[in-house]
Image 1 (tube, helix red, strand yellow):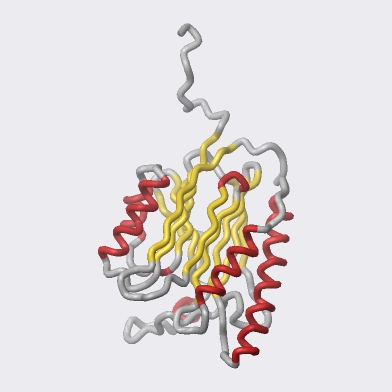
Image 2 (image 1 turned 180 degrees about the vertical axis):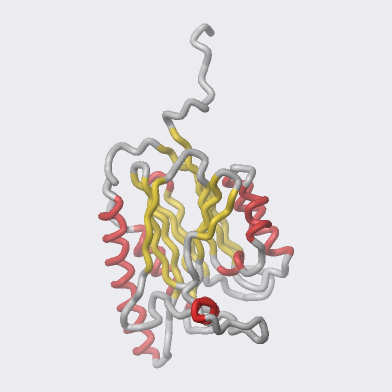
Length: 252
């Protein structure tokens, strides 16, 4: 998972406070030149959630550059663990139970990518006409589904089981995969994933235009009521050695 990157990345990002909330507790990171993207969602209803999400993104923005994917992810993990300790200390000093933030991070290095997350901010992959959810929400709903106890009547809403700052021990889930030309990744807060269906998301990503897609996703979520903060980061992958690139005719 090292070497000269055969891919280039184009990305676009956008965040909106929505139509109901007064404060945007989301934050995002969009650094295609470093192969690093993230979305963090401050825990609504808790103290200074916007500060928590900004602390998470600030820590990730200082991840050391490396041509080794495992080194990138290891550095990010340590920085998030440090933020977790800071948020736990801050909550204790303020006399509140939790100051926290969900997080999803995408890393790209050579022809591999990796991701880590805690909470219900999500990563999707759109590949060859199909959309796939690459993360599993750390939520009470998912726990009930896994145990077979979930029912449609009165499901628990907005109850997450992991977040940076939620507990003294931070549980980060991680995964890796090989990337390919034409892949499109979407990182988003639950303000988007709760508002739109996967079919609607896929219909937007099919264009392959990151800026157009990020704006369209925000607009659709607002049309659905904009009941939460909405943040998206859309990242496209291009093989710089691919045969499909347009080239100048040497005869000209």
